[in-house]
Structure formats: structure tokens, C-alpha cells
Image (cartoon, rainbow, N blue to C red; front, side, top):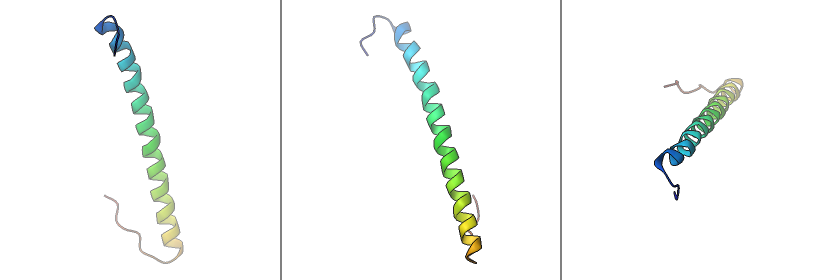
Amino acid sequence: MGHASTKAALIYLHRSGARDRAIADALSAMVEEAQKQKNTDESRHGEEAPPEE
């Protein structure tokens, strides 16, 4: 990465890992919400919702 030391590089990797976790959590929440909405929509239209895994 062009840093003078491994320690300097690890500082940025740590921050990146925390950001990756935040992004993954946000995406997971979006998927869960979309699945809930789909199940709600299907139940309103009389369709059977698929079983959750």
C-alpha cells in the first residue's frame, strides 16, 4: 500500500474492516426487510410464502 511500516498499514486495515462490517450489516438489514415485505405482499394476495431457511 506504500506505507513506511506495517503498523501504519494495519491502522487503515482495521478501519476498513470496521467499515466492511457496517456495510455488511446494512445490506443484511435491507435484505431482511425486503424479504419481510415480499412475504407480506404474498400473504395479502393469497399466495403461500416460501419457508424461511
